[in-house]
Length: 116
Image 1 (spheres, helix red, strand yellow):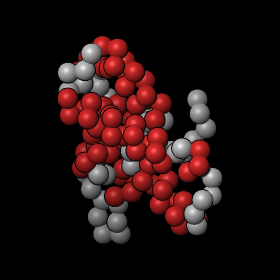
Image 2 (cartoon, helix red, strand yellow):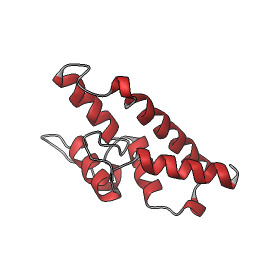
Image 3 (cartoon, rainbow, N blue to C red):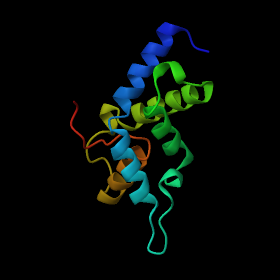
Image 4 (cartoon, rainbow, N blue to C red):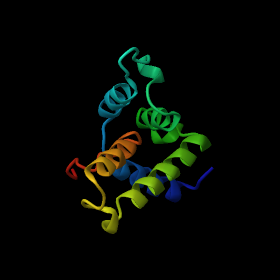
């Protein structure tokens, strides 16, 4: 397990990277997974990583597992890489930007949400 100082830093970084609430993320995962024919059960909507992020958002810091920590590191790294200053703005087409936003939202980060 990670030491307390490292855990505190990861917890803070994760909650900065994940700027959507658990309710916003759950709603997004349901919407993004819905199709014309079916809509998955809420607990099965979205990618496994998105579901894991949702589960982490509903936990206390003291209840985190090693798997949770791995996902938290992965999410922080991905969001940081995708939102670095040179990656910001309209670097690609509208469709590429929409896909990028949707990828990030599946991890709990809405790049269009103003910082709180």
